[in-house]
Length: 255
Ligand SMILES: Nc1ncnc2c1ncn2[C@@H]1O[C@H](COP(=O)(O)OP(=O)(O)OP(=O)(O)O)[C@@H](O)[C@H]1O
Ligand SMILES: [Mg+2]
Image 1: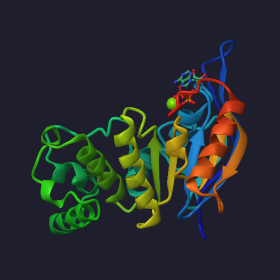
Image 2 (image 1 turned 90 degrees about the horizontal axis):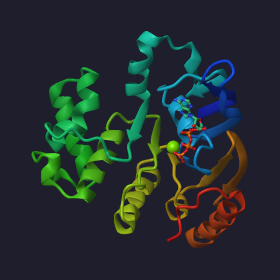
Image 3 (image 1 turned 120 degrees about the horizontal axis):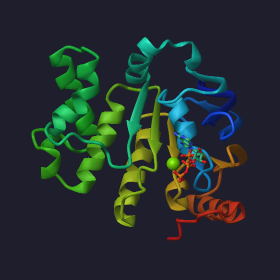
């Protein structure tokens, strides 16, 4: 299996002299094509920082991040948005759908910016919407569909450019437990059925139990790693709970 993401000795500092926060402290890791990786850890441990560095939203202080072999530090600022559009998909906590655009237009957005032909865009939108069971809703606006249908739209939008890597920061964070379960099952299907490689930050042990592997971060470092392997989801869930208890910090995931 190919290596989609490689992080090598990355450090990230915020602030300036006298008032420096070390948000990421020498993290190295690798993610293979088709993996579904979870990132967990207490509040302030550096999860979002790590995701933003991979997302090219923020720059490393030292070290290197490679996406499909491309060193992010070598992409100049002018090309970074293009790189992000062509290689990465995002699922945001609030889904970030634009209310003035239809479901179809929301899903098509990334392709529109890429200057893809209209007929090709339409075909891809319909194909992706079918995969997520929302093809009937394409002419509606976000405020006319349910929360679950919004989630599906957000997944379709993340998927449509066929990104090398999908990044999700607390995708289930704002949802009630039933909606959270529906969304994580959908994200898990993007991985299992459609082969998407996914890196997801979550506080929630139940959500995390759908992953193949979980990285636990503490004080900007990798504290430990759990692999699902032959465990059932239930067994994996219990192992995750054990590590979360060990890690301490804010445990917001009792369910
Ligand atoms: N833009 C910034 N400027 C200064 N410090 C920052 C900035 N962003 C994050 N930090 C600091 O870096 C550390 C890691 O923050 P980060 O947002 O990555 O944590 P997190 O693990 O995502 O936490 P949470 O679970 O609460 O979302 C924290 O100490 C935070 O205060
Ligand atoms: Mg965060």
